[in-house]
Image 1 (cartoon, rainbow, N blue to C red):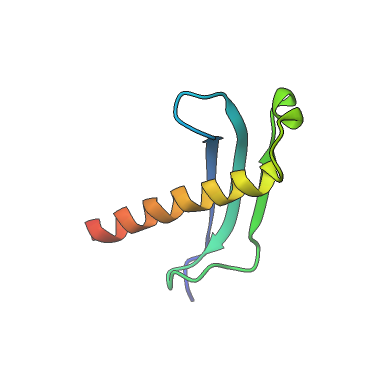
Image 2: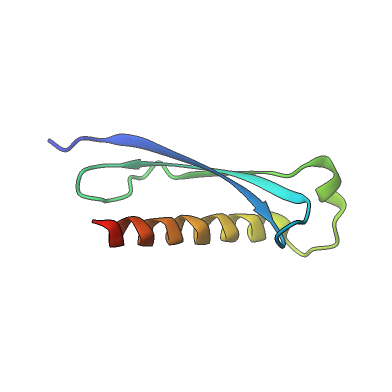
Length: 82
């Protein structure tokens, strides 16, 4: 039987360094010893009140994409350390 754990990441997203926060992204998923992602993936994007009026097409999608890119970078770094 594999060891299952719930993994949670919280990522703060900015459009560019030094700019105001555009979103906080919570990403939760189940993970087991075989490095397979479980079916319980959830993503929650929280926008600060002042960001909701920003003139960007889909700010939630942008924030989620940014968060996944950062997680991908972290995963690559941890793989290279093994």
